[in-house]
View 1 (cartoon, rainbow, N blue to C red):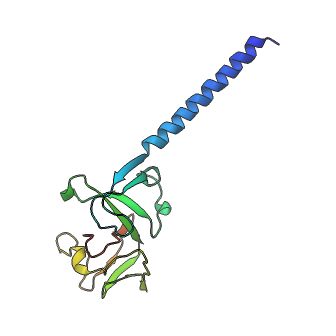
View 2: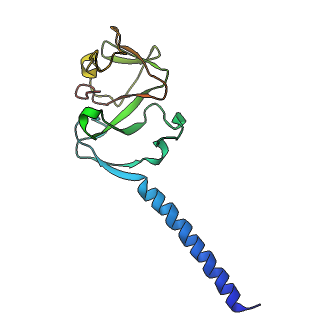
View 3: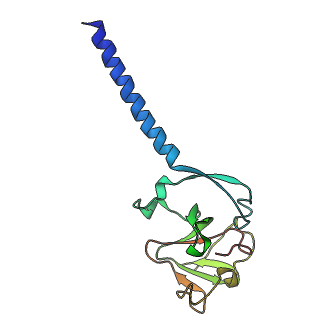
Length: 162
């Protein structure tokens, strides 16, 4: 057996391992972002000035929504009027859920949500009810979450303009 053939084989294996490790590392680096919290809409969970590490890979376009669950905190692009501002909110409803706000309390499918992380009441005025912006709202502040959508609210309901 030629000793040089073993070293070439070992070198080839090391190069392959290095290339695979570089690809995996690059994929992880690209899919992580550090986002600084601006505002108090997620108090007491997250305060203005806090930084969070966001892994964007699981929720990119084309990835099934089965990865999303109640209570998840996610970062989303704000409305067009906010010019590329990112918002951090909590998922309280998934597609098909009926969300209601009754006397400052949030109900999902008729069940009162027990949200230990919430600061303040949830008031319909904070939802910026506007017939042009959100025609889906009815007079009772009831809303069915459309297909491929989630219902998000900030934890600090008295200052969060959700």
